[in-house]
Length: 408
Image (cartoon, rainbow, N blue to C red; front, side):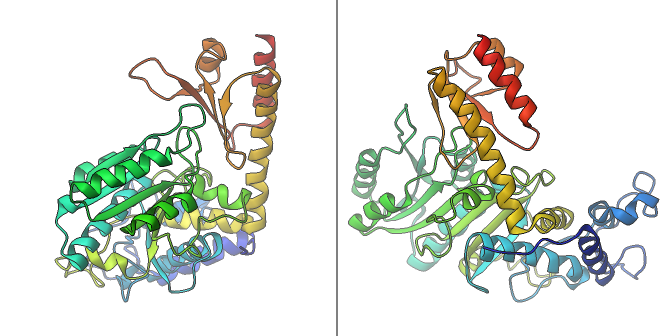
């Protein structure tokens, strides 16, 4: 895993050149595309500060990255910034998740929720088209700690699903229960399985045991696909656990979803969807005939600006800088956990993640409120309170929290 850091000047130059390659609503004769630049009364295109603001400049130019740029062809009007999106996908798929060149498809989506829906949509259509499956012969299996977007996906796609129980105290998947569920579904006539595994659950930072789950899948000889929801952990776990199984070297993994707007501090609306080559063809929208390259995405039109922002962040640091940043988050998380250990406070935390979930009642409610800890539920009495160590959680804030804990 290596990509070099670039200076801000180099990044600015690359983005400027990409915008110059794009067709411009300001400069070129564009009459057929149903879009335009941002309203100049609110977003003046010639403001002085834009010279050193490549993201804002791209935002104002408003390039539409509709379609799939890893495919045969795409809308040529914005080919300059599309090339930057392709390089962002390359860094994610090849450098971070160890895929081979030209072995994947993907795009920058409005968020991890869409990425998860996209994956299940593709796999549903894969089983229907390749195996002539009926929809009630397909089932989705995932942890009860999985993100709520998986419920959304199953509801929208009308897919049967089963949640796998976890141990309350450590949030480990109950693998015996998983076996029972598989046997139950097979008895009901389910022939095709979609597994959604977590690379960092939202509440606990849990990592699902992919090897153990694969052993169960093999023992049942299941026809299956595996999607990795790495929306939270995808931009920290690979940098804090350099030798892990969650990458495209692992032939078990078919697709991965990421969120740039969490650990990378990219603007909200920056999901990254990666999938092995050609699987995405199962949801090709041929009716989008007016779009060069047609469309494979759920959202259709999408801003190129957030792809550029995420590419800029990864390149200003380079791989070594990102590793240093993520290890700094781990050091802060370690310090909090060391204090919790000394105070005999019950909590859950994966050592390579920056999420700490503290058992309800272990620390005073006023501290939870003072530091904006998040409960696992707002519907009934919570059982856990979550700390997430992000960039704004500086050492001063960590020490204040620790001191308040010690005093109580």
